[in-house]
Amino acid sequence: MQFPAQSNEEEQKSTAYQREVIHMKRLRKRLRRMADASGIPQELYDRTGRVTMIGFGRVAVENHTGLGALSGTAVHVRLQKESVTVQGQNLVVVHLGETHVVIEGEIHALVKGEA
Image (cartoon, rainbow, N blue to C red; front, side):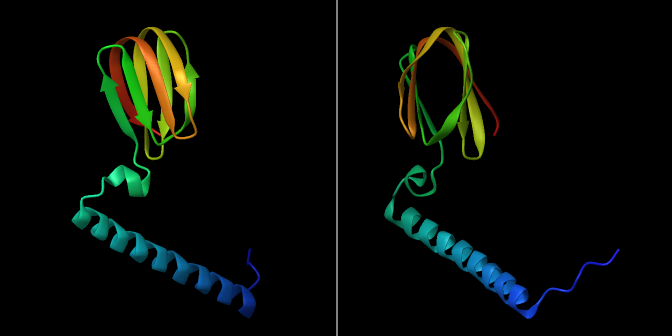
């Protein structure tokens, strides 16, 4: 089975897209180097997830992309490149913002997983 040849216009669009992807990768790399040199935390410029334990009863997760399974014993939080599951007893989501979630309860473990 043969596929029809791409038209010249389709080839140009494909080539332009590839150039744009390469340009964006280079730009991200430059920005990352500049941010590292200036001491800006990584999670501010590339939406890396950040998990912070506050005592034994509260966890804050920044830059989340949504919640998965949710129960009184486990809360699954999706991040851009991975996920984290908060395990414990009497877990409650006390704050759910666009990029920030706070979970309270008896926290027993934080389990890192695949996205």
